[in-house]
Image (cartoon, rainbow, N blue to C red):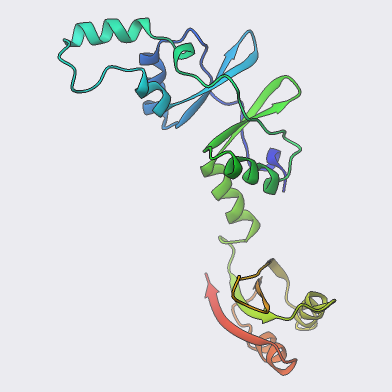
Length: 214
């Protein structure tokens, strides 16, 4: 899966001259946590709700509503935005984009195709991508088993599933620090995986968990 497959295309943007008050209202109305900042069709920054709140008057201020609104009208997005923007490409893999967000401790990244802003990836997009990758919304049976670190082991398991006439929805492996064997989580397109589970056990695999999902 690539970034273009799960990004939000044509994101809503603001300009550096947008009043903070207007940007906050836009975020709160649309449910956005961040907005790309564009000037002359070029990405020049990104601003989050937290950034905007930092340059807004404190709720504990003794200023009048009129004075607060006046001050807010004078503060622009340019005063709050981050100018050094971390971005990804629509051709980057999902894994690469997720790592970029995690390594930089950010909740969203603009998607750039050359110099053109074409989308944005947020945590919500990442969750949706994982849902699709692992087939969470597809009916089937989720099987968890321990597998040895041996060449061809996954091929053996997938061949066993094929012989049962069942399609694989998703497959993933992970290794716990305290475990010698890896763990394989595989979701198959059937609500009755009895034959598959029996075959796995007969082949010497330890099946630790089975869950059917509608």
